[in-house]
Length: 76
Image (cartoon, rainbow, N blue to C red; front, side, top):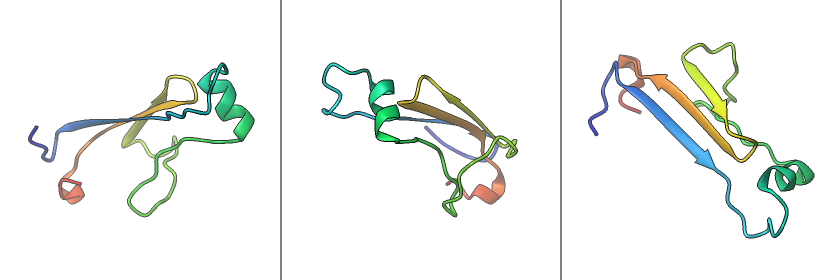
């Protein structure tokens, strides 16, 4: 897919582990104190106040972020 300014991009991240056993991923991640989140290029956690990014989650083990690329993103 060609990406350029004005293109909408969606990224998803899903945690997989062989440690789940008979415990659901959400229960396991809660018990281990793990948190999945998106960060910007500077490594700063994205927040709701950053209107460029729309984040969603399907439970605790799958997170998605959507944004529309700007010229200054330089296709990154």
